[in-house]
Length: 290
Ligand code: COA
Ligand code: MG
Image (tube, rainbow, N blue to C red; front, side, top):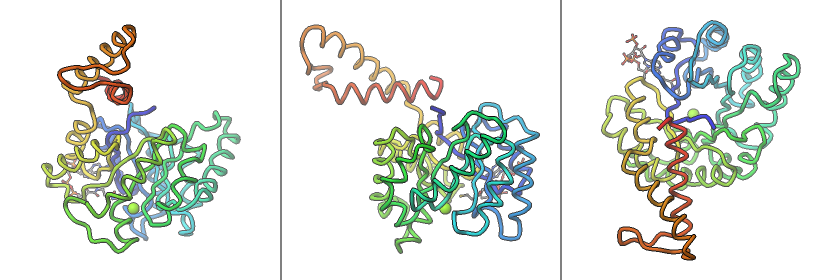
């Protein structure tokens, strides 16, 4: 699975930011036709993203294009403008039903057939950021076109959708964030956390990122180059976590051989769930190239 610790947006009409983004070593680059692109710049965003996909080398960064929401009236022109240049994935915002994903999936499959690309070589990452989307997570997360990709939780849109007031500790988003994490875990998808819009406050970003990682998110949306490093660090298991996880994996195997399911390590009880968690830590470290 592609590592998606930091997913950077920029307005799709901003060529300068797109060319900057490929120099940042960011996991995913999401060129935006939705809310980051002004209403009078939608056409320019489509053309600029198409040009970027044709001309730029994104290196190891995942190339994503975010279309406008299904039902906005812009979505078909958006997706048709970028598909011929084979992005790695399409991000659909404000997904509220299986049908929203299915609409895009059919169009993508038609393009894959037309151009002779492998089926499912272009993924969908679903933005879930409304009350309806949270209610319908079960069916959305199960769509096959999402398989081994991600659900992106939009905190600002969700707050607007339910009438919540955003606070610094984001306690008002906790239920929805955890709902996204659960739906992702049940379908082996990656859960991507909220944007910190106060992009100059890197200490607040660190705290919010670490909290998101503890909840179970594997990455976070970002909007500014300064956010890349703190977010990648927070979503990469640190050296201590890796050492601890390795010790659990090793001692667990030895303990099983001796016929003990539960045993003591540094004064703490270790059994199967702790092994599974340790394996997840090592998977994430591995995905991050550590
Ligand atoms: N992606 C790539 N490069 C970016 C960037 C981004 N999201 N945001 C800023 N940069 C670049 C700038 O172009 C500038 O490059 P330069 O030094 O080569 O000239 C550098 O980083 C510093 O930018 P800075 O002056 O600090 O930012 P700003 O004041 O110009 O812009 C924002 C601030 C928030 C308007 C801008 O970061 C932005 O538009 N972010 C994305 C917003 C978005 O896409 N929202 C929708 C999805 S939630
Ligand atoms: Mg949004």
